[in-house]
Image (cartoon, rainbow, N blue to C red):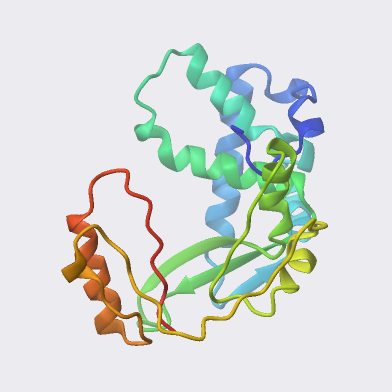
Length: 225
């Protein structure tokens, strides 16, 4: 699952010829980075669909959707060819390649948000580019394909029939349970058992209690509120 949200048919496609040579790929990545810098100079918050963003990328940077789709694979291949073990130095470039591959692959289910500054400090330029996923089923689909049985639980998402609609799957068994009695955090030491209530002070007490648990001990912490 190296590409957790990239479909198998995309992974099996052939890398386009315009980025097969290393120098050509580097040149295209430079053009795309310059395009991103230009977009981040926007004076106000801008929300754009991937398809529209790619059209602007083609016009402003000469980089089309198919080229963007293979940026992740091409960069990974290049780093392996150069036998680069410590890839942290290329973390920023990897983020750009991941972003390019996602918008080149999906024209629906994502939106691009560009914020020129932090709303708390509107006079200080601090541009941020976000790729927001609007369809949770894209991320969970590979999990359903890889594993025969998947159990999904939540203490906050209600009603439970939201799951099949949000994640686009057909459940074999679905049940909803309500706690009529106070729940307790169970640990090996009885003095650490604390009633769970909707109070953050109790929540942080549970976090502190976790330091006494042996490594590998399965636990379930309920989020307050």
